[in-house]
View 1 (cartoon, rainbow, N blue to C red):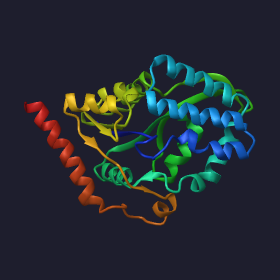
View 2 (view 1 turned 180 degrees about the vertical axis):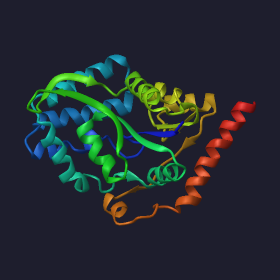
View 3 (view 1 turned 45 degrees about the vertical axis):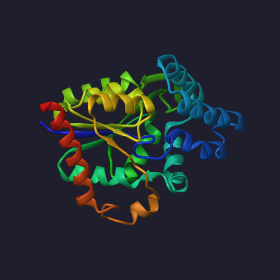
Length: 259
């Protein structure tokens, strides 16, 4: 069986909300108005300050569906591709990119997992060498325009369900796989793997990680996408630092199992 490393995207691989990061390009292209742009910002601030329960997640899903209804799938993905370097400077955590490289070197599949729509997540993944994603999938009509209906909502339990489905279908050994996230909303995703790791955790997730002896990593070095694309080597002492991170995580987990 194969192994995998599942990475939450926002504030785990990148230093901000991926959807919010593209708010300005969407505004310039006429997809959203100024009022909607401000609401996106306030919504993100509320989430950061107070977290999100199931009702909040459901409201966020419905608001997203109303927002994107009528947009064309191909136009959104093209806009993200064209503006990615502009909005991603700096955006990616150097430590996350190094860790991704280490997992690949160890033969693990690396998969981005995000509540953002596929049309945002897929281009971001491609630019850092990740082709496998689990993201929110919005239904489209025959012409490719978004409908106000969700086919898969990759948030909370939705992430865990998608991971379990993928593992069963493609023979992934979840007991030997890893999951990285900053948010307690991803707790269900982290619980389905044998190696959960909290990254820049919010207060609640940090408490849970401490109680369960999960490794906690602090990512602090955002780097520009241009820097990443012009180098074919890991950004920070690749094998040495990445191996040290994985080794520390394994040591903590071994201690937990033998306690």
